[in-house]
Image (tube, rainbow, N blue to C red; front, side, top):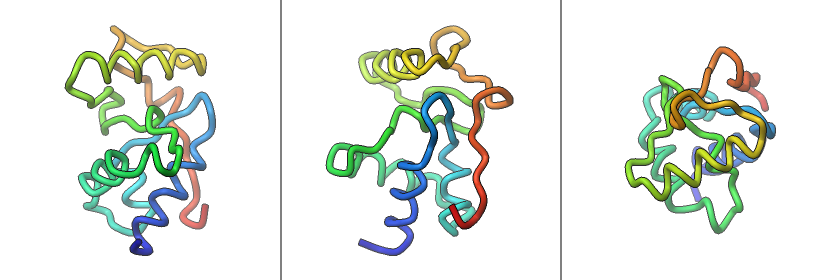
Length: 105
C-alpha cells in the first residue's frame, strides 16, 4: 500500500460521526491536491476491508455522488442516522457539517 493510500484511509477513519468531508478535501490533506478521483477508487476498493465510514464522504458540492439509487439511499440513510440533515435526500450543507482537519491529522 502506498503512503498516499495509507494517509487517505487514516483521514477517512478520522471523520467524526455527524460530519462529512469531500473527496478533494481528503486528497489535499493526504498530499495530492488533484487526487479526488483516487480517493474515490480507494473508497470503492477498501471500504469493507478497512471498515471505513465511506458514507461520510461527499462531492465538492456536498452531494451524494453515488449514481445507483440503492447505494445513494443507503448513504442517505446512514448520514441521517448520524443526525445529518439532507436537502432533497442527496445534499449535505457543507457549511454546517463539513469536518475541518489540520494537515497532520
